[in-house]
Length: 406
Image 1 (cartoon, rainbow, N blue to C red):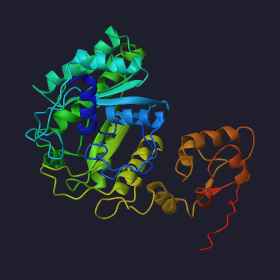
Image 2 (image 1 turned 90 degrees about the vertical axis):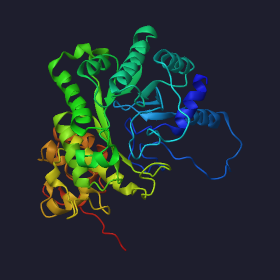
Image 3 (image 1 turned 120 degrees about the horizontal axis):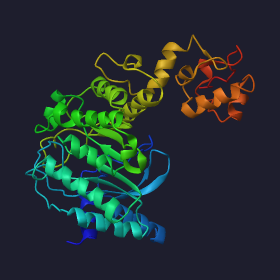
Image 4 (image 1 turned 90 degrees about the horizontal axis):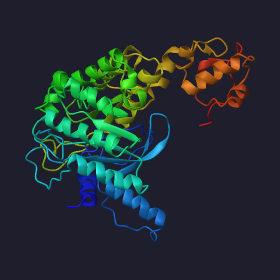
């Protein structure tokens, strides 16, 4: 099988979880680790244009437009060294023993095939994962070799995101960190109890949490100039949501630890979707709105200074689906105690609905040259005002706004 055919096969069937910055807009239906489910509706599209053909090629090869941590969007190839795996994760399309064709790249073949796409202008970066064959250590070595070939032989200077295999050794992590922009370790579940119901051959602390800790130890204790382009890579993780009865409290407790103690760049939440011929095929799909609320809350940890204790959990340990968690906090804490925008610290500003990091910085800058007196002053500096009005004061006065007529 040629490399293009392999990429197409992996794009159709590989476990490709969310890997880069993405929006919170409603997403297409996904399989357990994020791969789009095949659309079975009849093709009723108009005649195919060159632009449509290019988009179709991207989809066929597993290329999507990914938003980088710095904000730039690039075409990113998401693929695997092999779709064969000796682990038996209960939700996974490529679990050991499940029927289906498997494909494998050698490291040199993967690097050359990617560079062919790169030189043709089709892709600008790569996310590379793998099934586990002959153990995690061997598989991680093959991933690292691929990244090294791309950097040293092909002199590729673009974006590389490498998946860390469960139980990878510290020296392997250090080696990978010299060549990549991002590393990810998928915890899949929030604790060992839940992981045993999802992936019984994986060890939560020793194989999954420990590599994230070791990466952070290297970042803290070794000079950053040893990393790619003079900096150590960022890290991410991912959880499968809704398959084994985990609560939002469990997921977010672990997420808060990861953000604050091992400094991950992002936690991804992938709504469970049942896959035929797996032990969990009988379960219903998870609610995508729940995934959305988990993302919103994880950003409150990462960017807004919120803690677990600030969140409006139900008695069952879940977030209410009907309300944005930041808005719920503000209604409880700021409705009767509005924040004076001319005096508030940055951390106080970030707690106000409608004000993000950029908006808080804009308010602080504007205050250095004058007093903010009304809503038009906020609009003038680019701050969104629709949601903040009930929770703020401007020069000692609440903003006026018209109540809804319905």
